[in-house]
Image (cartoon, rainbow, N blue to C red):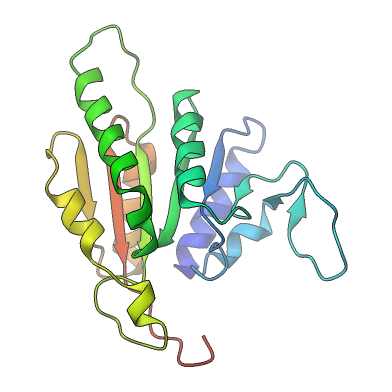
Length: 198
């Protein structure tokens, strides 16, 4: 994930003029180890800044300061419908909050793919961290493979599931997915245990 952060930093830089790319997530860009993103962009923040605040700007393109999975996933869907690009990142168990939203988007894409007048849109890309049964200090609350099962039961003509085993595969998969159109792409990523101090 650290190296993916560098890739995403470069995406921000390459699209600085177009301003057509954003990250969406409840509060987890740093804890998902996407640190390098902040070398190019800030969090969107429209309130008072206090001493010690980091990476805040009134025009930031990282949307991770609203602890609501529903809101963040909905923001991303709306953003994609305007012709722009982005992704949603969350811990695996918390992404269960948007199960039905993702399923409805996949259903909508399936129907739209049958309508010749409907323009294609950037794919709905989701990154899940802390996958499966990694039982470290917060394993009971942060892992739940149910979303992977939920996605795996959808039609393959709209939904794609990626489980890259290493950094190079993750970068290649993400590059492929962020360029794709009319799919729901899910990346499962297992983070190494950080121990009790987290």
